Image (cartoon, rainbow, N blue to C red; front, side, top):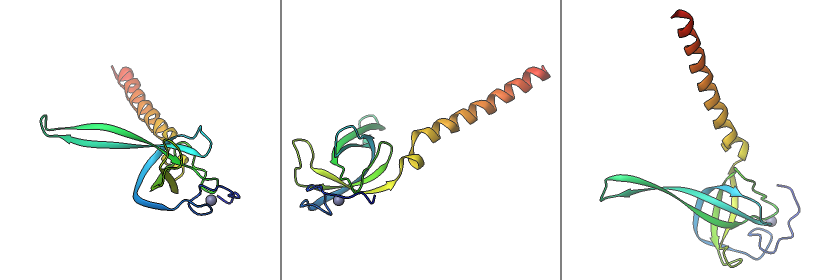
Length: 128
Ligand SMILES: [Zn+2]
């Protein structure tokens, strides 16, 4: 957060100005320098089948040094001018760090549920 920012494409310290829409999503890739891939889960009603269809959209967004979003973070992104061939969005805020919103926590919960079931099964075996 306190990192020095010499990024010309930073919306605070550089020349980029945000305008247009704001969206929220989760960072699924931070491999590229100064770029993150933000994924949004979308649920859409399909009238013909009266069911919901799930889909997701992936948006490449600029990740300035002073924000430094990581995989698993939930971020707010804002539309801006084209920064590169594919980038026209920039991360403006980290809403939740990866540890809080991460996948690791969910796995632990699942394990806990499994162990409870296993205990019950053991008890049943002893009784029977
Ligand atoms: Zn900056």
